Length: 336
Ligand code: KG4
Ligand code: ZN
Image 1: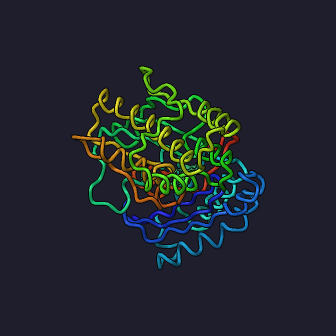
Image 2 (image 1 turned 135 degrees about the vertical axis):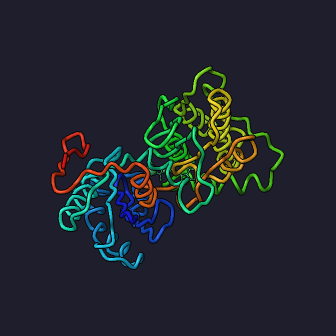
Image 3 (image 1 turned 90 degrees about the horizontal axis):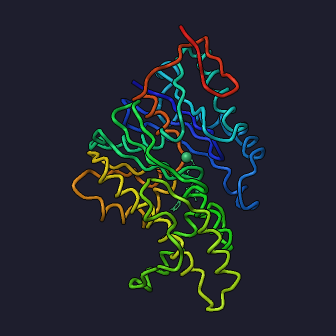
């Protein structure tokens, strides 16, 4: 089965073709993030306009790189939310049009849950159920228990900023460019290389001891802002970045481990853009024991359409063409 995935929830325009739920035949991502670097963050209307320009070339390239024409595609998977509405509509309308033209069904895809499916791509060791998944992205930080495909329980999440948002906002305070996560990670790596014995305890770890599975990251931003404005000790940018990264990683790892002890899953799955963070991967690798630890390769953690297609493969309840309509809440509905 070959699935074309389409992803346009934010500033990436992406299309991919995957085969049998795991093999990536093509995975094309066009990003307008450079444009947003200039403004220090995403301006939704500009992101949507860029999506319009990129979507057709990106879909065409995905098909040609996969050496396929449309007749060989069985299903189209498309992100229907969450995301920026203007950006989402570009992908949804494209998928609907292709569905009508090619007479192929559409599978509506939840972007966040789909992030987890990057763990099924390009690997022979498929995650085992029940699985506990931590999705850490620019907009979300969620712990999800998966009993099987399609059976998910939300265990906890952030009460304010997401982990990626914490990276992005504190990076801005340090004068680093958008997206902040990779920029902080690079500064932190430089610091850690020279100061491997520094315990990095400068910033608070909110809610770390609370008996729940929720996070809060907005206090970190305030603590960093205070430290910068009173920087009497002249602490370097590299050290501040290392401290920020360690504070975020610490709470993510400690609370996830508590959830592992409570729910006793067979595998722990890390996913979302922040899962590309080397330190976070290392810490989980060291601390998750006796169960499988799965994490996609860094390039499959950040937004792309391969995991969208993968989700569509394993949650295959397609909406048959041609009665596909998108209601104002952006769920695709329709019956044969
Ligand atoms: O999943 P994603 O690509 O898009 C959303 O769905 O939000 O995640 C983007 C987020 C951004 O906040 C970015 O700063 C963060 O992932 N990120 C990282 C790294 N690479 C991307 N955070 C920490 N370390 C990284 N290496
Ligand atoms: Zn994402």
